[in-house]
Image (cartoon, rainbow, N blue to C red; front, side, top):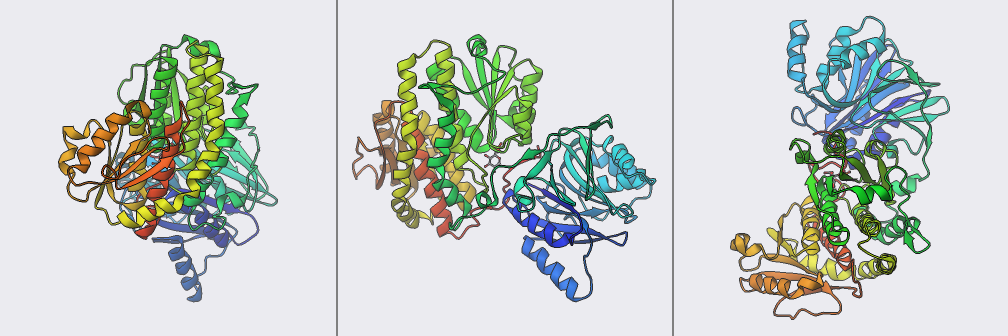
Length: 612
Ligand code: G6P
């Protein structure tokens, strides 16, 4: 999704902006640009395509005498919403007078009405974007006081947006504003930064301020002043970032995705260990109590994408172990469904980034109806983490690849801890079961390690099937929930059409698509339904399918049922299916690698989706 950067200090801004934009590439984008103030004039370079195109443009123009010099500037990577990817639709946008430049992440919902208004005032538009409305509106209100003009303009905008703004005649300051979409300010000696996300500025500073909802910051090279929506100056905590730039680098791997897959044993350890105290689960919650867990009568889980797939598993676990009616809902649907939640509902909100706007709004909807909200989030201090009543962090570290892997697994681990904790609070399980689960969770990292060591087998399968036109994933119960994620992972990174089906449902329609050679990936790790799943595999095999089966190493699947079998370590009572995601992630990765796809930044996708 769009990325914003800004710099003010005594160095040349453009190389810093270009480097910072590169660090935001993982968010997904289709064009990029920078604007720098030089002698009270705003100069802009922007173009469609990768940052390297922008670098070449800057370098070529420089050779031809068209410099982009100056110590204050803003930059942007755009993920198209209003208007197709093009040079002219790229950001920054500049006002007709040339006085104001803006970079924007988010959506202005009432942009048509504002465009008509501005046209009636004589403004001409050159792009199809909603962002150009913002810059012209600020220009319209500008009479010499930048902050006042920005305030007047934003009071007329609806939607969610983060903005980086500069004025040609105020080359000593940047203005940042945030409503919905995230924005941070990086603090350093004699220079300051703005950015959508920490990796953009990490090589320059580890001190950051997170802008809160509707907060506006005035940033100079020496100072940062933050104001609330009433225009009152407020004190902001400075957060010290504890991880370093290595975490945002590939560390010898070809792609972030494989690096992050390989990090999963550590991630699970880091996520589970701090929550185990004296052989019991301690989630460290501050505002949601055991009494709340006893009091609630239903659970709703809201999330998007892979986090939603974790929600599907969490729903099963909570119903199974804590015996509370639970449902997993796609956040973008939940918000507008007049959902049946009340003060007896616990809403669990799952999000890696903590910034997904659909998830955030779904959480607010649940809150407004009296529900307690408990988030499972990876990014510390993010919007969802801050706004929910309580948070359980997944200690997955920074995840750069757009397709999530390690954060997904960490969310799964937390789901088990949470389901068991709720079950224990409600007297559904005793200490013995709790301890069994804990020892299983503690065994998981070593078994993931073993699966990762066997990655050549998956690599070989990927080389066999990477030309598939269409792939089906089947499984029952939790295996089905994992199949959903396996299928999504594959299509995200390899662009192969794929579908996940409840194995027993296939015969009610989709089996018509199975023909000679169609690849079916079948998960059969949920032992209570093993035989039934094997029957479903036979059904597709009988229709000519090629089958990759994933099952437990204490069972076997005959060769005439599956062409390839991946065995996962057995001996688990509760959580064995959690391991089967590893071969699925590896399969998606290696298939995409064979097809030469842009694995870490798949086309059209964004890491953190901050528009509805
Ligand atoms: C985007 C990403 C997905 C992710 C989803 C939810 O669509 O591409 O990988 O699962 O957003 O993101 P979140 O940060 O809320 O987990």
